[in-house]
Image (cartoon, rainbow, N blue to C red; front, side, top):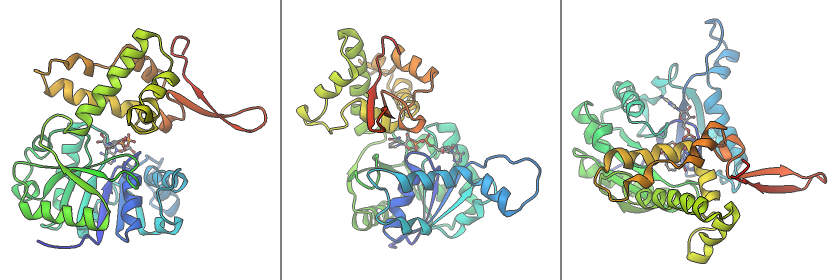
Amino acid sequence: MNKRFKKAGVLGAGVMGANIAAQLSNVGIDTVLLDIAKPVSGNQINEENKKIRNSFALMGIERAKKASPPSFYIPENAELITAGNIEDDIGLLKDVDIVIEAIVEDLSLKRGLFKRIEQQLKPDTVVTSNTSGISVADMCEGLPKNFREHFAVTHFFNPPRYMKLLEIVKGPDTLPEVIKTIVENFEQILGKRIVFAKDTPNFIANRIAVFTTLNNIRMMTELGLSVEAVDELTGTVIGFPKSATFRTTDIVGLDTLVHVAGNVFRKASDDEKRNIFIPPELIKVMMGKGLLGDKSGHGFYKKEKDENGEKVILSLDFNRM
Ligand code: NAD
């Protein structure tokens, strides 16, 4: 097995999936992007209804087109992406070389989706998950041997066009030639640098990063610091990215952060700092108010226009919400 990926399927058109699809299209890979179907009234199949049913995937492509910094090298690359939905268009996966799953961070949903697509694929289609830290072995449990042999984790970082790092985690049955094919395509064609991780909760990057983020939130409330002060202290001055703690959290999405923290809490029962992975009260309050970050238009920061129409960035005063 030594092949160049020419056609791909991406499942989930949210923060990661739509932008992974954009990066695949940037390097000339035809990509099918499927999200859940939006229900329509009546059962008439026509162009208008099809558009409505595909609207989650279509919206993902539109967000990627508007992303700043840009997700597409040139906007025309979006034409290489075919939008669809998992109910009507699963057959579009029949001739793809690789499927990258990027749906919500939930083991049973991911495994359920793999069971659903498995019979549609060519025997040598590679399937990978973009999970931030769910066990590879758990995700492919109960799936046929051939699926397990062609399955691994390819964990992209956000934003996928710009972040060079890619974690690869193999499962108990992944064939060595499958990993070789993934490495060759993702290093030489997508331009990633690969770090191999073991199948432990949240692998390497998120075991450290999620701990740091949640610890910073606790320290902020204990010490009475502001959101901006924490970002000053945890950004470039200590060699972290300039998005620091809270700009990064807004980009990731608070719901995803909570799911990913839960991976460690559930699985790493002997971690001496396990309780850090329980979301602090502030996170629960923000989730309750829908302050999820960029995806909901408001998180620790919010972009607005002032009375002169100039862009201003407000930060959350968590004492008064
Ligand atoms: P998201 O919530 O932005 O998007 C998830 C998308 O999946 C949604 O559009 C949803 O409608 C769709 N979806 C849910 N169930 C589906 C199904 N059964 N079939 C098809 N589509 C379905 O999530 P995200 O931030 O893009 O995260 C996706 C995955 O990538 C997660 O596993 C997450 O842990 C991982 N990840 C996220 C980031 C990040 O910064 N957000 C970074 C690296 C990895």
